[in-house]
Image (cartoon, rainbow, N blue to C red; front, top):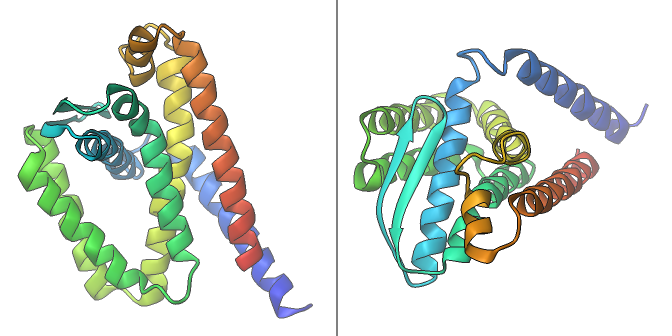
Length: 223
């Protein structure tokens, strides 16, 4: 069996184990920190969209029930509201891509992620739970970057990226398609544009699925 075939089989087996573990542990404390991290990415994406379109960021709030809110002033309301789910998907895709590129030092990147999480938390998060989570998660990333091998850091980066990408899909389905009455990003965008909530939900989940499939195929080819 050729080396490339073995690597591809190992990649498929690894992904199957990861997905199975994520599926069975989804509602357990083992996956909980990853979920809150994705919520933080979601809220940071709102903030970046607002600032990039001329607005400003007031504060970010995280709560232990996997919820969050970003208070901004000015900027493009359309882009700011659209940036949450798609932003966490985008960050996840970048992390997966970085984990598969040998030239990128995953330990250094994980350390940078940790520093940024701590800095953004101290600057903009204004809830007790959010401050505690951001500080602990960021410090854990910094320690992992220093103490773990490059290979383990690469695996950690891949898990963060895959979880962020998949959670975006599940979050869109839960918040928008299953509970259209919820005050979600899509609900507020529907009020702003006059286009139904379900339209934005189906559009975003279609984009998320397409990006995830393309990302998986790209990672498989590089295995």
